Image (cartoon, rainbow, N blue to C red):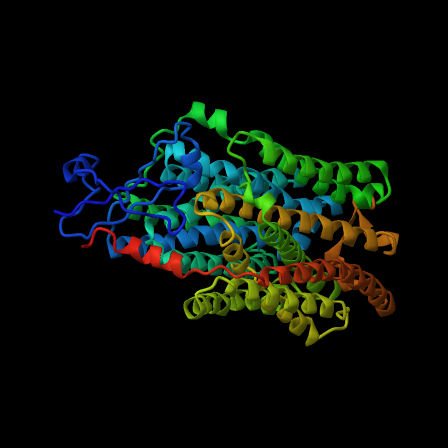
Length: 592
């Protein structure tokens, strides 16, 4: 009988994520761990630590062992697609409201500040809770965290659907974001846990493609339900749709994971969690981000030079700087690996990731508004017009992943992602520059220029992560991955807040007062296409179009600066032949 190989992970190992144990535990000991820890006739499976953060939980430096039992091809064929579907739901919900927001704004009579917060609330809680899930899953198990996150996400979606006012909708979006953060974290960790080392890059890229595909589905679904004139459907059904899909995904995941043992940290406890988790760093990071987001959100209401606006924005940046200093000195398991602040390459990649998500989120939400408010499209038409932008980003991520794999196999260097990052930033900078040429009368260019943006942004869905992890040591990968997604989500949140502030500042100082509703705090977007006379209508549409143009004017230089920074990544590519050899040894460990 073959037994599952059990191995310790040592901090000094960097060639691969798994190594063989010099003195393997006896097969009887393995069998005593459960009926699924070994399978007759199955080849021994290498076992990897779930995350390096677990290793940091052991003050004594004891090695940590995890049992990864064999699982069937049928289980994998069920598990991976259902996990991808769950991730798809969580990421689609972030862009679902992009095309339905004008309709929601008119029905719930929301102010312009509240307009942005429908999207911000979801991403802010998703960002805040994401770092906690990895450590909590060390205590209670990966599967339990995933299932609870799916329940919270479903509950939030249900509350969004029944919301009677904007306060309830924003609160419900915040609840859904809490669940979405757990889904994103759990799916990535579980997939990495059960997939062989040699196949992890492929599945990581598959999940990145799933993420980018959600950018296609979100605006289309939001437009489909908001653009129905029969009265049988409304924007609420976009949230209700999550419930049956989540139920199916839960059933499939429960069945496929039923006999898969995803280990917990043997030495983890709630006491050690409270003693070692970096609560201070997380609070400072979120407090700084929240101050910046709130400051930009209030800029149009209070004025850009108002003491409140300047205080919040400056205080936010100051807290983030203090948080960076704190991270380099804390004795706790910091959110960001030490290499994040000492290695220029990791800093550059995080800056690029931040600006990429600023531009992508601003583009998704305000292109949808442009098509409806300035171009006269229905929500569903706006969803279709967004296809070149969202579909372009999805399609571009696939050949980019292929190229990175091809380049690594051919040259045995890790510079492939760096080339993709630079090219993607150059194309997206050009695309956002071209968006400034769009106006209320644009036709074919209204879809062509966003397609250029989508191609560039899509190349950046996976490549920065590859470049980032390539700069880290093996023991820093878990914490580094958490930090990477923390920055990604924060960029998306800040991007929407900045875009909303820019739009408000340009619009409310020029638009005729009779078009404002709710005491002058919002615009009735639904009525813009019905304005008379035609000259007055064109004047108003031009104001809306040029206000949105200013958002592209802000995004283009951010991407251009990122492109210049990315050129530094092209230096000193890392030779990966040794690491590849280590992974190959890992995949065949115990077969001799």
